[in-house]
Image (cartoon, rainbow, N blue to C red; front, side):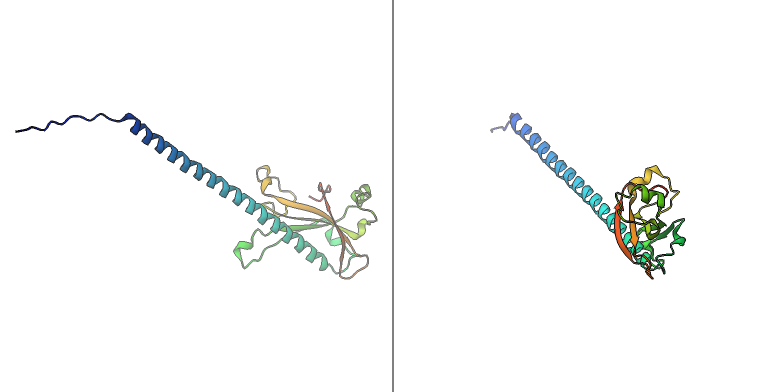
Length: 184
């Protein structure tokens, strides 16, 4: 009777190396795609957050313009000497807590005369400083949190009002940078 003897087969080393190489290649492709997808999504979220803050700042500026139209007399800006900060918020809707804010302040005569070249023909008594923005400060002029400044987005404007108009009507609007002293 014939007896079967198991002869050990020689392992093919090149085949095992090829499988390891394929495993490394597949893993690196998956890792590369996942890292690319993560950075793509992360960048998209950052861009959308910036776009939302810009839209909120524009809403705040529009709210400031609407508030200017509500001033009864353009000759009487005495209520705005200290500055008035208004948060845009609908109390009945919780998600509107941080829509933005604006701040109105009577224009400083010294600043306006020092910058007469930028603002030709403007009379400080007919002008308001407007700060419109969004962020954690909520328009608080004493806010000082250096870690959160990156979340602040605000702009400053000089708004000229029509002389002797009731109600007040904005005539011209100039964006200004940097902020006029004493406004912020």
